[in-house]
Image 1 (cartoon, rainbow, N blue to C red):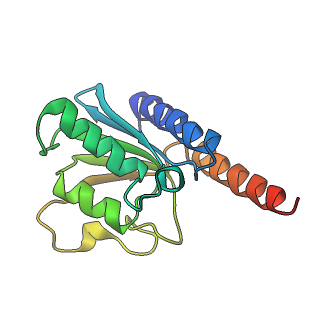
Image 2: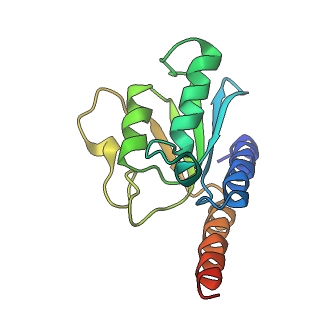
Length: 154
């Protein structure tokens, strides 16, 4: 883990904060191609009323549009929360080089928590770096759900 990983994860946390500000579960993602941000995304499932509106998918889509192709083999994806099965499938299909994530997801994470997609015989295996800025990434989620529970009681 280097300075760059923390820098780009801090950008992903800014995206997560956008989601939180909209009342969405605060997950953010940033796609980086050779040091340049080429795509960003944040969770919009509730506001968009769309099951596919995950931060990772938005960042991958933006990166593909920005670069003019679907092969993101020089792209690193920074995500505040361990990706789910759907997002792991997109990561593999887009040929993402590295996935760097902050908080583990014991309920849906598929890069080591519930299962590990990288242990399956897919044709592409991204490098995985877990726990980058884990405290900050976990905190934004914990605070969001704490506030949600508190406000539901009102």
